[in-house]
Amino acid sequence: MAIIIDGKELAKKTRMNLKIECDELKEKGITPKLAVIMVGDNPASKIYVRNKSKACQEVGIEYEEYLLNDTVTQKELIDLIKKLNADKKVNGILLQSPIPDHLDINEAFRTIDYRKDVDGFHPMNVGKLVLGQDTFVSCTPYGVMRMFEEYNIDLCGKNVVILGRSNIVGKPLAQCCLNKNATITICHSKTQNIEEITKKADILISAIGKSHFVKSDMVKEGAVVIDVGINRGEDKKITGDVDFENVKNKASYITPVPGGVGPMTIAMLINNCIKAAKNQNQE
Image (cartoon, rainbow, N blue to C red; front, side, top):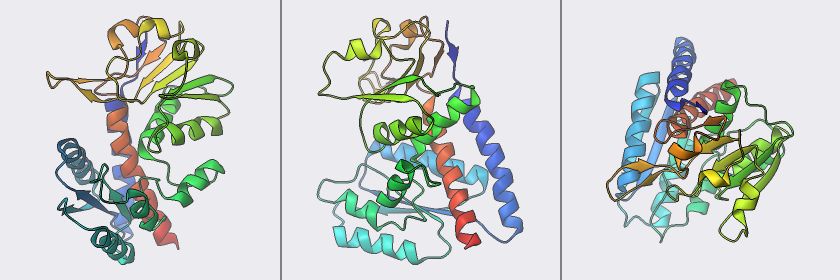
């Protein structure tokens, strides 16, 4: 029976430590501040943004929200980002995705000052991650890495299989694991014989957004299984990519959904925001 990796508890502990750091910064006259831009009316995004604001409040980070109409032009979006770049009080800028199709999200990410890019999506920060330099790591992969650390799961020499190759999770997570000397395989929609590959994984991470895609016969006995997927069924229930009830009997460690990777994503955003405030005030 697998040990359940409790992301909720770890996130709580992380936030408590970050609150101490935040209080220390305030004593020096520095109040970390996060600006979040949301375009349109995506219900899932609304929930994420609400959770981010709650976490900021709890730790003591100033929080500012910019809700833009889904008819906003690219120029208006870019101008807002430039305005926030220039605002010395703002340490972190986050653009909540997805954004409407008529907007170019990559240009928006490139426009965010890389020193304020608490989501780790700026090409400069992605490049630094590849080079193994200190940088802002994308929050979900960073959360997963913290879980490995907390539960003493060593990646060195391990076979890590990642399902999904998104710029937000799959690719940066592969790089994070590679930086810890793991051997990485990424599977995606064009991969053939996925089951044969997943069965060889010491550590299996799924981030594809398909409910219960990973079945127990795809998992090696004693593997570590990390479920990044968040899927909402017709009954409005949240499920992961992994068939949790059956896989937990085979895995050595497993993350639940909800209560696994999700809370850690937000904790790492707070971490990145405090890091940004520290960096900017050192300069």
